[in-house]
Image (cartoon, rainbow, N blue to C red; front, side):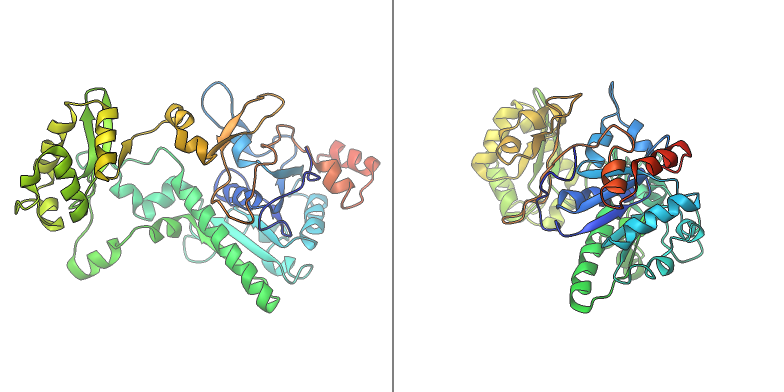
Length: 400
């Protein structure tokens, strides 16, 4: 598969050189590629990005998602010949993306000050654990550490146990998403001024950004949020409740919605009850209120509760896994999951490009290519004009 496939999306005139590996950088590259950018991913020769081997089940399929729509080439960044190849690519690019430990790119002669000499309008996207400055900047930083430092890990899990973590690498994907957001804003600025800039996205600050009012609550009221398990303190009812055949989530914490829930339960008496009449009152009586609702839901099936909540206009739903997502008609109608066939998997399904755009919708043109250096000939030969003989020599010498 090659980039001769017509790209679609709002970024079809943008080229991004993706360096780095694993999740935090490459997810940003995935978002860009999904929106139509020409993303050329640089991997070390011989082994490639470790994401090629990541995943669960019988086969490592994560690569199919995170490397989709990208042209993959190899280059040894630890030697001058490999660095020079990358410089040539960056000279004609709009953006370069990396998530190495701060200082690594500078050591290779690929820092921002080096690169703007060959491409003055370049936008450099830098994703790291702690950012490019500050006393912790040179430390190794993974998502789990950033989630802990940013405050998220402390709030995850049950209050009587050690802090837990989400079952996903949320710190990485948050940092990548903010990096993408910053890069798109930098593109707008460059359109107005002709100037590039550096996007410095740290994992810990990306987590910190979504921590709501935890900082001002502490500063003003000396309040430290604590772990609360499956609920949010003082937000009720909003929980998972037992049905006769499974669990079901109901979120009816707003006054008018709570009134509709009460009517659906045949408990109109609760609407004006001072224990439940206001948001603050319901929060203070959360356990009692949840028990009442649970006694009602467990007498019915999930389908029956779902229908009752739909009829009443109460936000509610099942807790989905992959099987439920694939079966759901709403997922199907919105094409949230699409077939992305490969030679190995003729009906490989994965999440679609998001968000949806009315005029410039991106699409999945191909999944991550399983062949290391699959686009070396196309990119180095076809675009940089390097001969087949020279490419063969570079491969023999482990430069590509």
